[in-house]
View 1: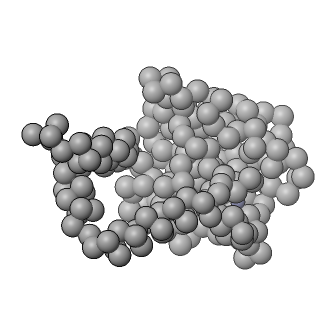
View 2: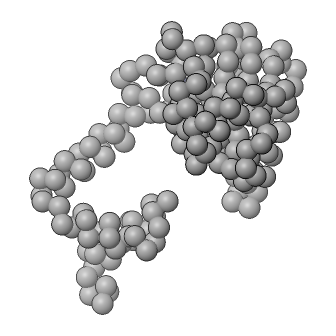
Length: 200
Ligand SMILES: [Zn+2]
């Protein structure tokens, strides 16, 4: 039936490429878009297009920032720039930020090492992290990788890459559920894991 609706078929193909969108939901999402008024559709496309153009990755911490503005983390005088919390993804950064208990800087690696998914060291922003240590401002690195096999491998790799630097390296406290990802952890647990971090 869908073969006879080529425009719908193209829309569904695009939606299938959106990660995190469960395939059973793409028909609902397609229905939602098709039901918008022309003005609502224009607004949606304009916001998406503008955000895509105006948001860039900070050249220091690799978190999203406004193209025409400052990084809310690296350029904030209210944040302690002597401590850097290293996270796998931007979603993990948001999870740490939501705890409200951390006021240092961040570094977003971009992913966790995963040979099965073809993600190797070259996909992580470790060189940028190392270069941030060159000016000697940073005293501590907190490896806030997820408590998964990939997260553990990533934390070990980052720690090894920082060999020879003066910086102290710590890791989130154990006691988090095995397989736990920061994104789905409750604020209290994550806050506790941060404050009770241990030497790596
Ligand atoms: Zn930044």
